[in-house]
Length: 131
Length: 277
Image (cartoon, rainbow over all chains, first blue to last red; front, side, top):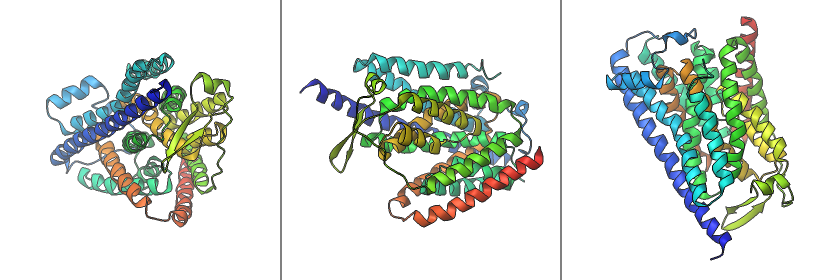
């Protein structure tokens, strides 16, 4: 097998694993959202909604720490937010996986590109820019 | 309105948005935002936060299928993700300081533009001329399988495509949409990719782009579980059903009817934005 064909084979394997990873991420996180949503509805179904004006100071789960605290006390809305967090991490995990697979392929240019994307997201994750 | 009633209405609306979004190729985000803001009076900041979550869900879900078929060009996707993520984060940060009325007006304009784009007949610009230096350096030229035959293609004008993606990413972060229409322009018209590759690769990139801005929104408290939950479940279910129907239905007429509805929603958003200034 020449190197070109070998590279192609590897590319195909990567794509199959990537596809599975994405699908699993979506299914798992959406199930968590559904479970959390059910709990949230059972406890709050009669409450009155108010989304007319954006009030960021009222948001209970706007940090990862707050979400984990809420999940540990089994609050429905915290579990929903945890599922959303998992969903946000699905494409990010995809980048991490891509970095590994390009490393195996010895395609260091794309390893670097993967790290650049991760770095950009990490900067925003730290909230340094958001506050 | 009680939480239960609100959840049911949003769930149904989001299902419809996801269904129509996937049938017309507009995406669920551009439809759920007007529904939430115009029909339910939800502040556009919350609507955007919920929409971006649904964009991640639908794009990751369908990307899974495309990637397995081997049509997606992962290198092009990752290379351009540098541009879209930088754009998305900048857009999301700017959105925080923008008045809701300005966002509504901008949203309406992009909505009209997207509706026109879905109606325009697509012209295949793909090329085999693989002399582009950037494309060679970044190994972007490739091939995709179609009915058992491998089709080669070459990529052109990388800096132009990169800039357009920066813009597409900014709008995505600013408005909480996938901005697929702009991404396809960048890849079809500027970089001259074949349709199949550009649509699937654009979809592949949407997840990471949306995740980048979602992180900023989460910190800002724009993602409210009470809205995001019915929106992402509804849109994802609708989009999944839509992609199954799409294989059988003739969407030509539907697209026209739908473009008119979308244009009407867009005008209403612009009107609401202007009258609120």
